Structures are given as structure tokens and as C-alpha cells.
Length: 256
Image (tube, rainbow, N blue to C red; front, top):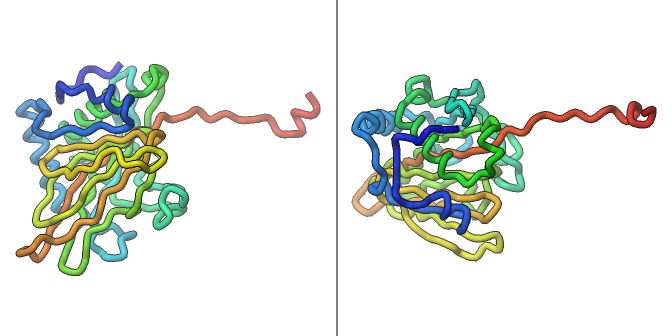
């Protein structure tokens, strides 16, 4: 069983996600110990060193991506030697269907104490069935900066209502500066709007249940009086790792 994380909030996020298919909270409502706040400052600084996303045609998206395996019953979280990302073309018509390779977070960031506690915090607040707590869980972490310049908006992929293919995804704002836009939308499966909000302060968050609806972030534009602006987000997603089952070859089935 995952121990209670050092990050805490009074809001019942798990119940919100289960009932609504989404949950939102303000970063200011999180209780974070001082030692983890120092680790958060280190994480924020790492966004200045994100490499370009080679799959962004405009050249104004920057990204790192790492994967972990979480063993909830041991309270164990370890990075995996995997940095590729694959979505189906049905989920992401623009970039889906191909393996996208991103630079890893780096050893220091993968081991960052705040990031690790935030992963535990998100997992505890994801309404998984009880059986998942005795199952290895794949954790994806994306650090993304979208930059807007005059005539060049910052656009997420895909730029439309979509599903990610992971049961639960948490979108944490790390920072934004010199921009307008970037509104988050969440709908039900009939694409009826459930919530429309703009994450404005550090760690403002929206979490979504993939089976219950669609989500999207609108493009960002550079604000008047600025030559450039950016929006930094940290995405954390969770997918239980299913066991591999093998079927007997057809010939064996017939002979039995």
C-alpha cells in the first residue's frame, strides 16, 4: 500500500474524479513541506533546459519524457529505461501511429523528491479498483514547454478534443508568462462541455478520466507587449501493467 504522500489537500479529488470524470484544484490549496518546496524550485529551473520537441513543426514546443514503474504494495517507484511514446492514430491523428522519441528527464529530475511525492499523490487520488493496488503500474511523466511568438501560437498535440489512452492523466501547471489563452476543456463522451478553465498559478491542476470523456488545451498566443511567452506543464499518467497471456497454437488446440 502506498504510504500517505507528504503532499496533501483537503479536497476529495478521488471522489471528484470518480463522480464527474474530472477533478480540478488550485495549487495554493496544496500543503507542501518546505523541503519539498526547495525540490519544486529545482524542478521549475529544469524547464529552462528542455530540448526541442522534434515532432513540433513550428519548433516552439520543448519536451522531456520518462517512464516509471510503480509497485503500490511496496511503496516503490523506479524509473524505467523507456523514453518512447506511442499513441494510436485514432487518439492522435497528427502524431499518433508512430513511436515518438523524447529526451529523458535526466537522473537528477527523475530522482527529484517533489516529483516522486507528486506521483504518489496523484496515484492515491486516482480512483482505481482495489485490484490495481497489487498490480505494477506504468507511470508516464512529460515535462512540456509551449512557446508563443508573434504570428506563431503555441499548440499542443493534438489540437482538438481527444483521449490519451491512459486511464488517468493529471495536468499540473508549472508556470506561464507573457501569454493569453491556454484554456483547458473537459467534456463527457458525447462531447458536452463539463468544465472550461485556465490554469494560472503554479500547480493549478486538472485531472481527467480517459474512459469518461475528452479533453483539450487551447493554443496560447503571445500577450501584447511581449516578444515571447510560454506555458509549462507537467503531465503524469497511470496505466496498470496487464500480464502477458499466451494462447496455445491452433494445431495444439485441435489435437487436444
